Image 1 (cartoon, rainbow, N blue to C red):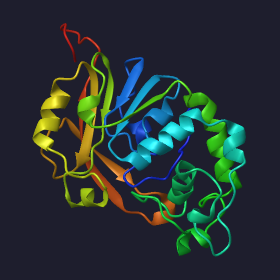
Image 2: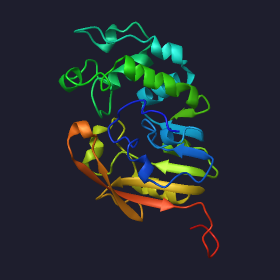
Image 3: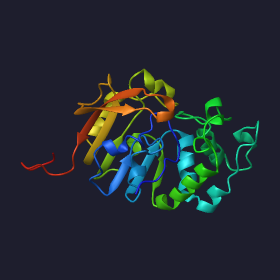
Image 4: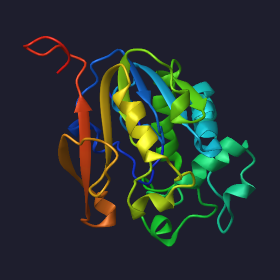
Length: 242
């Protein structure tokens, strides 16, 4: 059973994850973790997350250690106030800030107009904290690495590689300066199953397919067309990897 999403994140793959190949290895490594939409669908796996953004890495470190009681005790943002007014640790403020808007790449300080006028399940609220609290006991065995995809552990795993888009859409990310040629070589050298993606127009991998990702229902009906690379870890009928 899946968990999350712990955060609604720009370019997040939680809703799209069931359309990607299922993990074939016990260990999942997300090389650009974001908020781990893929791994959240398979929380019982041995999950390793890697992200260069100290805010994202900090939130994951906090969630992995947090108890349900700690999450449930987090307060609402005061009326007319901001996340700076919350008497909690900085990581919890960042977590609340991501719920102040939908699909952002960095946490906000105050709830957006869209968030204020939406149902409580959208913004930072008790129902959201209940959802997060239900999920944290199931990720205690996860590990977060604050660093580059180059710091990924070696060895056989299901490698999920979802970097900042190589297209213009990638500029929204704080750490969008990626050497895509080097990333492509890194992916092709990985052991085990490899699942990589980007938007149509990217050219750093020998893509094996395409997939259309629909936006969150609350944000209209836009569609992101993505390219996909998949190399199975399973032996083919002719021997070797598929």
